[in-house]
Image (cartoon, rainbow, N blue to C red; front, side, top):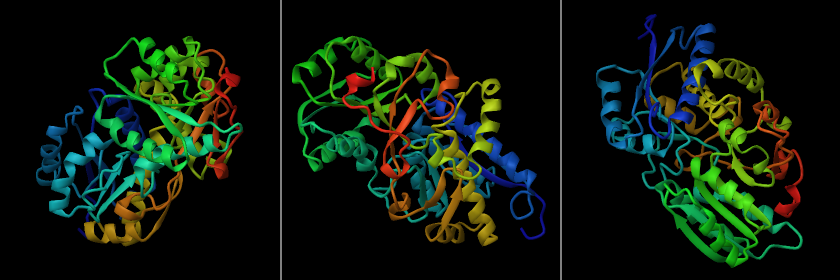
Length: 394
């Protein structure tokens, strides 16, 4: 309302408990820092900003009811998407029905089938998210000499791995790699020796992994202990982006190549990034969240920067006006310039491939500046060279 000083209420869900809590809690801290920053500068439209947040407990069935509560009872002026497909996708039918402006955080391909025009994705996978997440690994392998020829695909038998595996198959074909082994394992698996034994029998050049947190840790250990050495290994692992996983595995990660969305290398230190990280890292320990925050926190902060820039540019909280502006604008954020395209995905993908190099011991501080996680693709953002084959990096 014109002339009001009542807070602008931004409502959303996060999985603050359950299996996705680690990343969600990191996002919460980033959002809180943004709220403090924006309010210190006078808020939005001259009004302070308030965040109204519910824990969905990683239970997708409860998400629609929470968003209905945010809109109908809490009277949220704006709603945003929480972290991941599991929270964002179940909110979409209600968001579509109400025609709300909606920016989701790290949902993979959420809007592929729905094509809802007022949805925007804060994830740098671009207009073909399945392929973009995995393409860099295969493109990089194709540049190596002698050129690798074969690939094995190993993935957790879980919903999150479906799209990356589809993308991996498409990219293997695109870059001329023959798939000689494909297998899944239960998400609850703990003994990976038989799994890697089967991979070794294929004598693959590339070992593509699509794993999640604990199984990522167990797979790295199993591969390190096994005599078989693929020429490249990694690609689609969830876990090595997190500080706790990095410090747990330490030197065992050396040589692995994996996706990232942002790392603190010189070419990616966009305006405001270091200042934000300094604040986040100073508070992370007391907040009990990822100590460095490189994976989740910059994207979460950028999500709110997009909201703020759209509100300020339009002078409005109107969902249609905000959506139209966001579809046609470029946003300046701590993770660089962001422009949205088809289905609200980034117009241009910017998925990184990093290789862990030179890790010594298990201290978190060695990961602060990006020197141990070298960007090896895309070339425009590279901070070093790939060590190939994998065995040479051990």
